[in-house]
Amino acid sequence: MSPTAVTLVRLAAAFDLTLAGLLVRAEGNGDRLSRAVDQPLWRDPKTGYLRKQVFNSPDHPVEIVQVDLPAGRHVVLPPSSYAFIRQVVWVLAGDLVILEGGERHVLGTGDCLGFGPPSEVTLANETTTTCTYLVVLART
Image 1 (cartoon, rainbow, N blue to C red):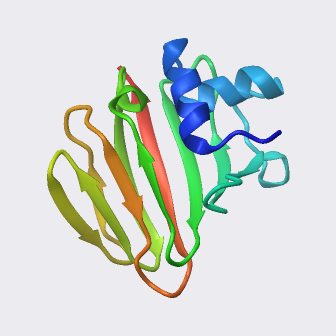
Image 2: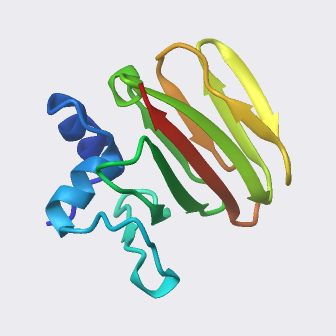
């Protein structure tokens, strides 16, 4: 069985962890040096999005995640997934729509959005090509 991103985020929040923190504990990673060949990949079985854990270390407050969101797909994340963190999304390729706290943000390649207070967030790719973006977050 492979849980969805939403299920994993809820599980992580129950333990006051970020999704990366949960995965690091499950996979035993967490070195300060993150070699490209060792960066774990995970695919959401529901949306098909591919998540690469670029950097995460238990003794460092910053995490970096790269996501490939397929065309026409979206993910809805609950407010609990943003508790105890501050987050920025930077679009590397394609277009991404972020619905956050009643606001709709349309980001193109190179655009960056810093998230506000915890709220339900929808990350959507409304185009016909894959969108690649980085998530940089800091634990608070």
